[in-house]
Amino acid sequence: MRKIQFALLFALSVLLAGAAVADGSGWDRHDAVREAVGDATPQLGQLRMQMPSVSEDGSAVPLEISIDHPMTDGDYIESIRVFATANPNPEVVDFYLTPLMGRAEVSSRVRVNESQTLYAVAHSSSGDVFVASSDVRVTVGGCLMTSDDDIAEFGQPRVAPPRNLAAGQPGEVRTLVTHPMETGLREGPDGELLPRRMIDTLIVEFEGDTVLTVKMHTAVSENPYMRFFMAPETSGNAVFRWTEEESGDTVEEQMAFNLS
Image (cartoon, rainbow, N blue to C red; front, side):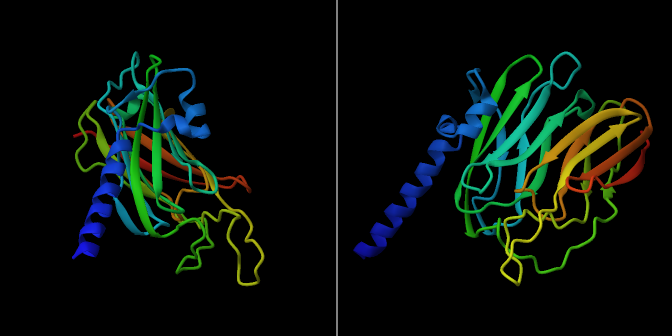
């Protein structure tokens, strides 16, 4: 009975410890996060970072970040950067937003090397800085995991546009591309490190104007997936352009967005 009580108390203490940093506090203990914040005093509690509290597969952990903030030409969230300070490289993914999104919300899947706290830092065009965090426990670390499939091709992107898109109203867009996202940190069957092969950027444009730019680091999962919003004022064509880091090769998909 005492062992059970101790185990329950220990579990409760772990949960409470996690809750203590879930609002973004503790960010100043990490060099990469401090550098991203800069000289500003960040606001805590407004930026939301949602991840599962426990993930059996650390190679593809869902991540969603959002904030209730204007997305107008005069005042908008211009960047959201994510950090996993216990990963081999702390930078995870950088989102560079524009008012054409209409809504400051982005999602992806990321690699988490071990149980830790992830941080997100958002900057607004008016100079405000926001910090959020999320505690994640992983059963198997994701940075060095081998894939079940041999993903060798840089495939054609897939895009799921909004079903009903009204002028100026944010509509959900999802896109994915086939790619191994090989980090250069993983050993092959012969014990040698596999060559690094990463996608560097995703750029989404609408009628020639940039909607979203995503800078990917080694913690973005294979077959990169991105979810975001677009709020065009008129019907038109969007281009989704993925660029590989080492080769400079590019694949793209064009999609017509028709307003209802």
